[in-house]
Length: 378
Image 1 (cartoon, one colour):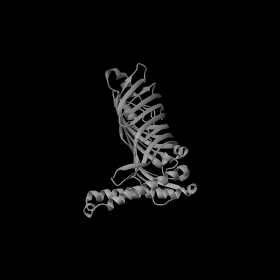
Image 2 (tube, one colour):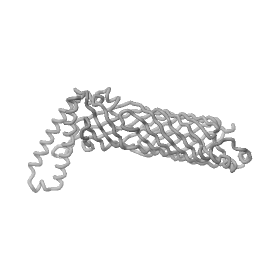
Image 3 (tube, rainbow, N blue to C red):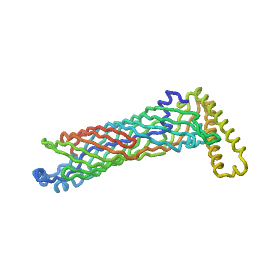
Image 4 (tube, one colour):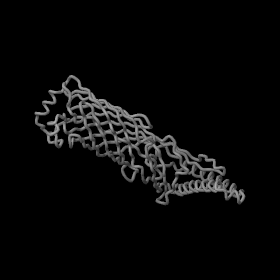
């Protein structure tokens, strides 16, 4: 039913977009404690803090806190694959009425895979609050498996059309985030929160994601000054703006000849099943027709057959002028699981340069992140 080239370029925008970005890099304000750190603590208490940021940085160092450099920039590579749920799908043609397809379209094993490369500039606004921006490029592939189903007189549902599509496309990403964090004696806790928008062709507005990532970790020092390694565990929660709207050319979605054959076959099957439902209903006695179970069964079948018939008839009309026809759509999508578990580590070569890796798993989402960060005083 779908032209292969068109499926690979446009169908995903008709169905879903999902991408999540984590850009947290683990540096933090650490309260220096312990006898073996007395020399560092004493030097902090008597030294003058030389930078403008963070606000109250001089007061924090005077109380024995060891601060990271106040500004930085990091480059991050992120990959994720997750299961997605799609519902409330509405489709219309040539700016005509849209048809809700929830009852007759079923999605199975739909997944979204995404890769992003982002640059994150950041500053420590306060000793315990980091603020950052997100700028980057996203590359995605979405696998959609779906079918059109209709009932018969016995309320047995059968698939009259199916499709599978893999689509690859790219978009620009921008966002903002904050990370409140605190450390004592090398142990630390951080709450990473960011909002990101990704602009894609085929969508009326950028796709929005909100990420929340609590992490608990410990930093282990090496003999070389300022060199250490941090390890952590935590959670990763994704909230996705569920509503998606768009407008596409029909010729970008369908091979007209193939689609026309599928539409004609589908209309025939809808007509055959409608006749079976009518014959079954007419064959019931008045008492049987008054039975709530039979009423519900009759109404459910009629609604589904009417929805399938309306969709196929509208598509039939649009295909007659396919070169000038358009498809309007709206849908709701969400990740199957909002939370998954993460573990990560960061090697700090010195206070200027850090390297980080992180992976997420459990639930229906798997992810990997790698990044490098450079920090400086501001």
